[in-house]
Image (cartoon, rainbow, N blue to C red; front, side, top):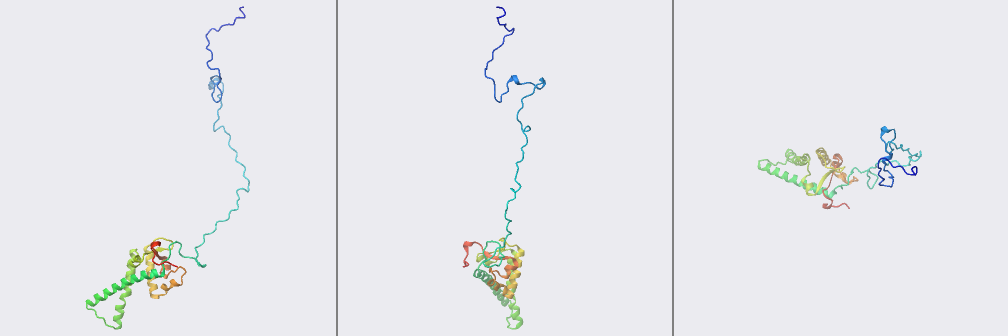
Length: 233
């Protein structure tokens, strides 16, 4: 009887409250040991423990694609094989449009010349029809014309005739011309006026440009495309 009876523990023991054992990523207290106890802590996954990925094998001929070489930039051509000198999309003013602007400017020069003759006559100047008088009085007209063009060229603005005709100057690249380009255009205009060939060059040029246009690298163009009075056919 005494041997069959179970021995009672000396201290009371509380029964387990949770019968299910923790599973998954939860570490039970029974398996946890401090570093000094001789055990080893459970290993967790970290970036350092991961082995480096091996580079994938790439076939030798995979990166060698037969791409065509880029085509060199070609200059803009006209209806013929002649290369264009104007690289922007601004149209060149028509001959009639430019003639109206030039006519208005020369009309203003003629008014200034008439005022000069009036002041000259009022001040007692004589109008003798000899060679010296004709050269003196006749030479004032081109001087007034050159001074008129030089003033607007140095000022950096279009002449009243061009503004009345809704024209503006533009470079071959589509920018506003600077004072140097305007001065070179003035020199080209004087040369063309003396030879007359520079003005007639517009009939032979593929883009209807004159000598002043080629010398200065500028050309007249309408201020707004919708405000053109004359359109090229």
